[in-house]
Amino acid sequence: MRTDRVRENITGYLFILPQLLLFLIFIVYPVFEGIRLSLFKISYTGETFVGFTNYMTLIKDPVFVKSTMNTVIFVIFIVALTVFFALFVASAIFDKNAKYVSLIRGSYYIPVMVSMVVMTMVWSFLLNPSNGLIPHLAREMDMSSINLLGNKNTVLPVIIFITFAINVGQAIILYIASMIGVPKDLFEAAEMDGASRTTVIFKILVPLVKPTTTYIIIMNIIAVLKIFVVIQLLTGGGPNNSSSTMMYYLYNNAFKYNQLGIASAVGVIMFLITIILSIPQLRAMFKN
Amino acid sequence: MKNKNKKKLELSDILSNVIVIFFALLSLFPIYWLFTSSLKNSSDVVKMPPDWFPASINFSNYVDVFSNQPAFKWTLNSLIVATVSTVGLVIVSSLAAYAFSKLNFKFKNIIFVIFISSLMVPKEVLIVPLFRLIQDLGMVNTLSGMIYPNVATAFGVFMLKGFFDTIPDTLREAAKMDGATEWTVFYKVMLPLVKPGIGALFILNFVQVWNDYLWQLVVGQEVNSKTLMVGIATLMQDLNPNFAYKMAGATIAAVPMILMFIFFQRYFTRGISIGGVKE
Image (cartoon, rainbow over all chains, first blue to last red):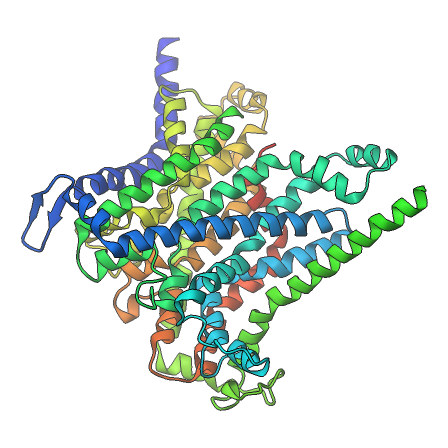
């Protein structure tokens, strides 16, 4: 009996061993190493312990403050747009014929499939001030500002819109799957009572898909928090750092300015934010 | 009264669907522009007003991308990184998921909780320590350096455990009664039953790694160790002002994923929904 239990323990550990090892080396170790590095000044010659100096430097750096503010702005607007638009699309089509649903779903999901890099390249061409389609159309319609990415006032809204447009398909797929799972008799009962479609959507459908909404919000906050590709390929953080983000700031410090301690401190801050944000989602997962 | 109500209800429905279709077309337009631009010649592509349909189809931009850049090598690198990462992930996570679902061992629950807690942490925030680790392991500019962190993610464990959980324990007990070893139970009995889960995990992860950028950018610094995503992104910064050429590069990276979506749409909708939504 005892040896049986020992045996089962050993078998269990053998099965999880490969995953556990990789996990310890490539996830757990970097987390602790990142925290350690954030307390050091790192140069080619060696490492010196500096306590919280890196964090203090960050707080005093206007570019970091700007990058953080931009990240927060991106998170708020992109997530809000995504949730509202995805809810709107999904609730309009979920009960239609299956072919139509998969066609619409596909149209919105193709940009997600095609990746941020490719989509950003297309948008960069579309927005190019000298030979892009959008500035051309803007000129046709007699609008003055054509360099949307070179203007401090338009660069953030443009990035918000592009990121939203590329990624909203993910949320739409999730909402449709969740809405199709809602039992039909709930709607039928409401319709019998003479409720309009709008009422059914707002009073029955939206509350019922709330777990999906929570999931979408958290996943999107975390995805936007690490927003990088659009910034690097579209604006390079410009004009004059006005579109820099935390991840872009981290990347530049680590791989351009060789400020590994500073970059690690940004990483630790972002790590803590993701952990705190994911608590509600983790709770929901463990309930199951 | 009832009739009137029904009519009103349909009007709002039709209106919403018109808007939905309009934006769906708008969302496809950049893809259309990408394809058609890549087929134009260098002067047509910047012509204003534009040719909404390419006047003539020419593939010279594609030829240029493949002859001016090691684009074959990049494609091969992407294929290797995505395939090996995914096969590796499927192997290690199906083993672990089976253990978490069906076996009993000490600290099982604690370890699982730690695994799951890591799900939300993007590897990008760990990029500095992770890069130094890869450096210490001598894996900068290697495909292995890009692959390992992808295999370490706990996402597969979480996803496949859900599939193993739906298989009744009695199946395992019956096989054990017949004298089967744990490995036989896993490999011969359980694994075939979770095939749909493995399929969904495979496709989702393949696409994710194929489209990944930052980590591959950091690890593959030499031109020949770049992946396709990183390679075509460098075309953006290329001095060549020919946008048709840049769009051809972008198309090369996009087409495999579009084909995958068309062929495996079913898996995406299923896989993504399993990803986290449990009502």
